[in-house]
Length: 79
Image 1: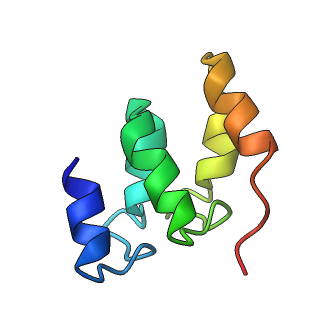
Image 2: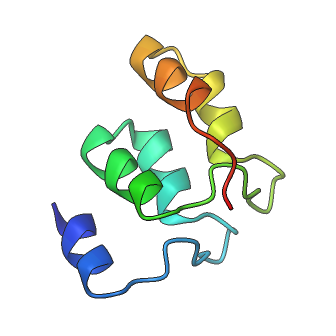
């Protein structure tokens, strides 16, 4: 996917948009697993809050998708 190409080009994984959301926020909200795993692997911060105070991890743990909850239960905090 495009996210892999962007990461290979050196994209900032924690860059925020005007709503304070990172690519990981958007990937979690859309349930796009093909972007979530590469972003986490590249060091995206699962605990970085957006402008509403929500982190990708919090959103994932409240998800109705069991696979998304499981994925984020095993993710360590960003370094």
